[in-house]
Length: 428
Image (tube, rainbow, N blue to C red; front, side, top):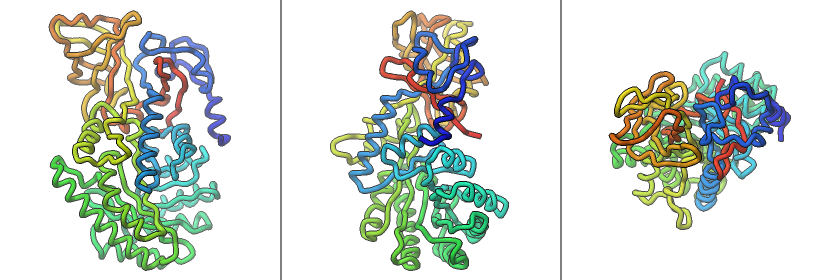
């Protein structure tokens, strides 16, 4: 364990953190599990966001098994939880490394001892290059590979390498819909720019992101991704011609269409014999009750999850949001104590799962969140339902990436619904 992680476990929590009961004595992060808190029993200040640790572990084991079966590696995108304890644990469990979206995220993971990183974004211009160089100079053990989708991005990375005093590995980004080189001419320009900096920049492979070309039409999405994988393979051939002996990376893969990435790029890596396909899926470890529930349902519909009899339906939503009923101001309406400050809402509203009352778990069938204010959830209640003030409602969320970032601490639950651990998040 790194000194940073050890110190993190010794950091103090108090009632300035959502979830910690008011008036509770400050306690160390590592001691949270000894408190016996159960959100369903009202032991915690609500609202609170929790992680079902058994579901998370099952999801981890399932995607790792899929990766082994298909001969690919995983660098889970740390932007989803931005919890160094989680990122470090995934590496200890066998992940190739981790992916970060910016320099702040890279700094956090490097301090936590996660040294093999993919910087999965362009970072800006010369000033950003100097900042990246300073970060790498402060972490001489860092093994970082960075995206470049233009000669300007290459110059930024050259600035970083010069400031760091050592070479920097470059991944040529091919793309559509977001960043990435759009055609052969753009790829050629990137390669030429890298070759202008021998000793500073090293061609390390090709990157892309397939989610940016997805549409609401499954057939169109499949065609778009197939075309992107073909352009990625063509760019890889150009990089290989310039680096005939070097181990190279191919990297892509979010949490919705990774099967199409494997279908398109795993044969390329295998035929090359000296390349690794690295998936960057991050939300898959958390799953959800919304956008990824639908995405993995579609994955099963196209029979894309080939993993020894397992299906994508075996992934389990791991996040829960707990809130109390504050008022029943009129028939058919309840106001619960959470809102946009607490939950994702960009891709569906939270879904009521269960009602907890006096130690009993009751059905939430018929309840529906209709809208959110900053700190209030409007819940439609069917006629005759006895939902009452003080009931604790357990919600599933949609889109982990825009939910966890609202929380400074994520509480891990055991199989009995008791808090077993706590994870600090670092979203800056």
